[in-house]
Amino acid sequence: MNTYKSSLKAFSNLITALEKLPTIGKKSAQKMAYSLCVENKFLGLNIAHAIENAALVIKKCHKCLGLSESEICEICLDDTRQNGELCIVANSRDIFIIEEMGEFQGRYFVLDSQQDLEQIDFSLLNHRIQAESIHEIIFALSPSLANEAIMLYIEDKIKAPCATPLQFSKIAQGVPTGIGLDSIDQLSLLAALNSRVKL
Image (tube, rainbow, N blue to C red; front, side, top):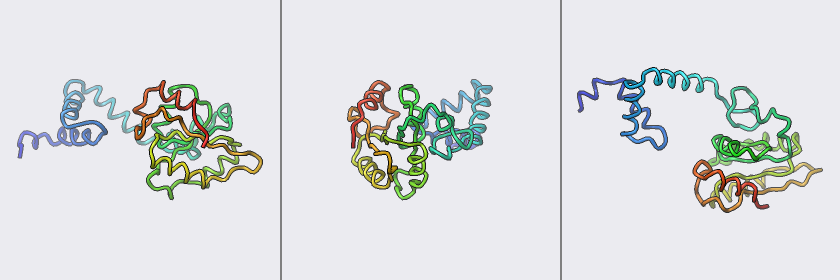
């Protein structure tokens, strides 16, 4: 056993924790830990405080299941965004990606539980469709056979308002198969969103 490493228990624990982050390997974790603990301790303490504060404050919006610092997020509270369009995304990160484009003016619904379709809150989703006079459901899911099945399942479970025919669409096929939205450039994603196709 490396006695030098074992004598730096706190440092080793930090490296181990950083390694658990997506795309961070052991060498990158070591560099980050050294930078935060030795080269720039002030930055390290600032980041630690920001992480602690965010972890305590951030919660899921009660309406869209996206991220929020209050019970209802700013997008759901914004009356100007009640345009009848509801964009269904795989996770909260995808809302950030679409919002950065500044083109979509509707609202969102986050699946989060894609792998377990039985956990999707269809009562919440159907209530929103009725209450917000939704006329178009836009699936912003990366193209794959699994996501095609998810879209069909959700479409079958959604109850359209009697007075309003509900249209279903998905982002165009310019998005590569099996790639998450966070791996697509904004121009391609914007084109896919604007060129969405009916289901």
